[in-house]
Image (cartoon, rainbow, N blue to C red; front, side):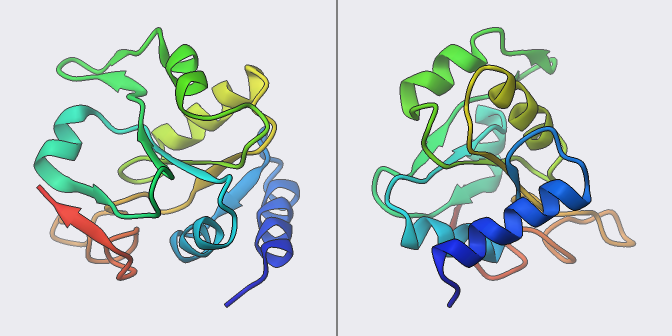
Length: 154
C-alpha cells in the first residue's frame, strides 16, 4: 500500500514527464488506493448512461462515485452541461479522478475540468475496460476490470 504523498507524487511525475495539461494521471490500482486513503477524492465516470447500463461500473467508497456524461448517447453529442454537472458532484479543489472506457474521453474531460478551475483533475489511465486485445475484446489486457478491482456488471 502506498501513501497519499506517493500516489500524488507519481501522478505529478506523469504530468511532468508527459507534459499533461491537467494535474496528472493514475493507474487503476493507484486510483483505487487513492480513493481508500483520501475521503475527499471523487471518481467521476464520464462514460454514457448506456455504457453503465450495458457494461457496469466501478465500486468505490460511499459518496466517492459520480456519473457525469462527457458525451450523450445515442450520437456521441458533447454534453454542454458537463462542467455545471461536475460542479454539482465535486468541489473544484477536491481530487477528481476521471474515468471512461479506455482513457480517451477522460483525458478530454480532465483538460476541460482543469480549464474550468478544477485544480486536481487526474486522468485514470487504461479506463474501465481498457484496450482491445487481438480479437477486438476489452477487459482482457488493461483497465479497471482487468486489474481485478471491484466492479458490478450490468
